[in-house]
Length: 114
View 1 (cartoon, helix red, strand yellow):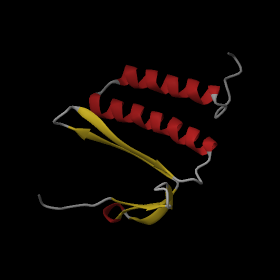
View 2: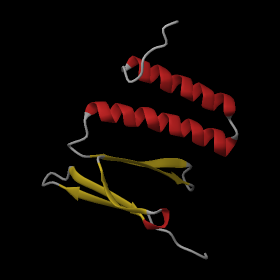
View 3: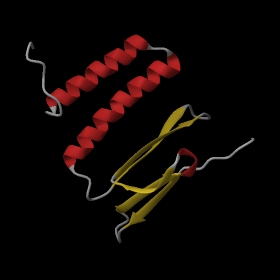
View 4: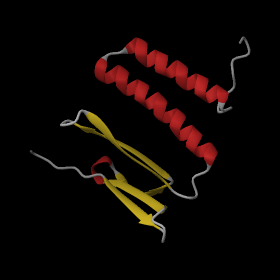
């Protein structure tokens, strides 16, 4: 290994162990310690061929913000699928579903011709 890079996540909890404050930093990427309301982290566990997830959000994260986060995450996953596996059609289908999700939750306007 020629270089090591760290991404740090700091979680401040209340007396009930509910996240009150979330911060993250990635110095190599130019990201100094920054506060956020939510972190969704997926890790591939090779031995079990399973995804391990950590989903954290603070009490201040509003429901409308969470809906937008989920929508944008779906779009990001579609981009990742297309780039990593060259799955253009399935990535397009995922984007179509993300658009449907956003329309149903009034995050975006439905096209007038529908």
